[in-house]
Length: 166
Image (cartoon, rainbow, N blue to C red; front, side):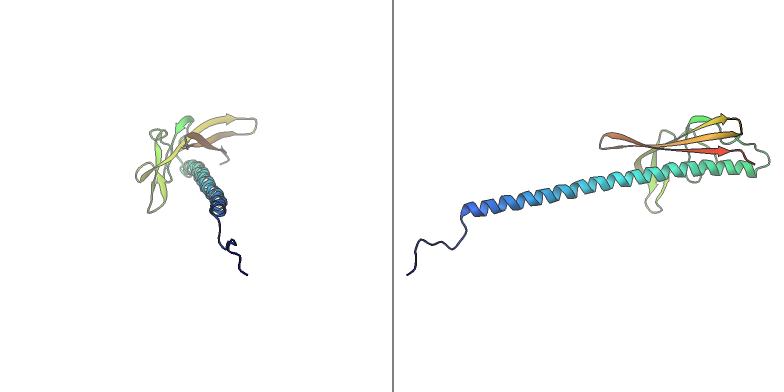
């Protein structure tokens, strides 16, 4: 005998509950993906800023080395004290004009400079001060790279001590 009241399908309530469970799962997955993209962007900006700060130190060190190779210059002639210096990758001297300007990137060469390219979110400022201690005369080079991310100011700071050991 066949029971006519027996049902072989899903009820509307079962379908709605299934859709709610699936949508909650997908919403959670999309939130995790969105958060991962935000973290990846922050990490990328921190890495770029750290490398720009280290580049600033290396350029100042290169300028100092140029002083050593010149018989007409003494330590500190080109690397002068100040708190508003700027340099770019190919600088031969400190620049005070670009310290408040945004760096630009040339997308074909991936080189950051103040001259040409697309504007970035990064500003680089260099402070140089003299320190005299018991043992030697040296310069303290501090490079700051600043940017704003989602309305929050961010900064990376690198400090290097350059000695007159020639």
